[in-house]
Each structure stands twice: as C-alpha cells, then as structure tokens.
Length: 170
Image 1: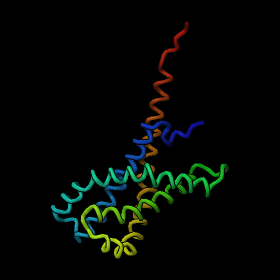
Image 2: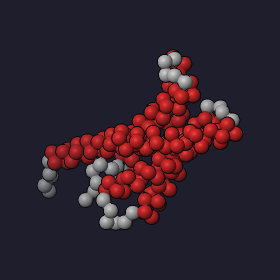
Image 3: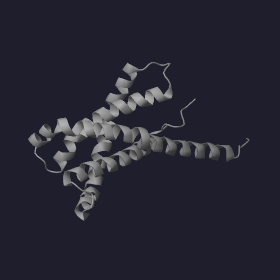
Image 4: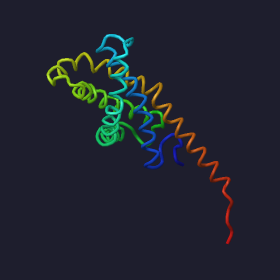
C-alpha cells in the first residue's frame, strides 16, 4: 500500500518539496536577514526579504532536489531498516536534509548577498548551529506536517474522484 502522506509522482514531489522549501526559506530568511539588520521593524528589511525570497527558494529547491535530498536518501537507507516505521524514516530524512541544507545555505546565502567568502567562513561556527536548530524545528513542526497534509488532501481527492467515475462495460 502506498503512503498517502508522501508524493507518488514527480509532480507531487515538486509540490511537496515546494511547500517544505517555501515555509523553511521564509522562516530562515526572516531570521538571518533580521539578525543581520538587527531588527524587523524597518521597511528595508522586509524589502530585502522579499527580494531575496525567489532566488533563495530556487537555490534551495535545486540544492535539495539534486544534491542534499539524494545524499539524505542514501543515509536514511544506511541508518534504517525495513522494519522501521514511517515516522522513524521521516525523522532520519529530516535530520540528514536539515544537516546538509543548513550547512550549505549558511554558506550560500551570505555569498549571494555579497559577503566575502572569508567573512562567511569566519561566521560559520556561530551561524550554522543556530540555523540548524531553527531549520530542524521548522521542518518538524511546520514544513513537513504542512506538506504531508497537502499530500493527504490531494490523494483523498484523487481517491474520491476515482470512486465516482462510472465503470464502462463493454
């Protein structure tokens, strides 16, 4: 039986990843741009967030889809067994994806905004742990449940539609 909380096609996979990514990117952008400006009360901060959102979202989607997601899948297989339940596999996947994405985006985000590579490397030990913790709880509490809810709704709608279709007899 297929798991109705997970994507079952390529299109659903893109939607699932998009929901997770947009929620996480929004929260992480607000956190990181807000802390670099020192406040969220300035119009310039919100303009910076809105300007950065599309580019960071695309970078995060590509990075997760083609690099981090695949590595996380390999690690989930290494650290889980066939007898492990759905929640254990999801938790391992979240852990590995967030480890990779938070480390990568802690470097890539500031580089996109124009910071020097040396400054990014010097700030990494203090910024990455915060980014990891926030992204992990964002994934656990907001992004993953929202994406799984979207998948459940889509699959319930598809199931309802397939039951309503008349059976043609030849």
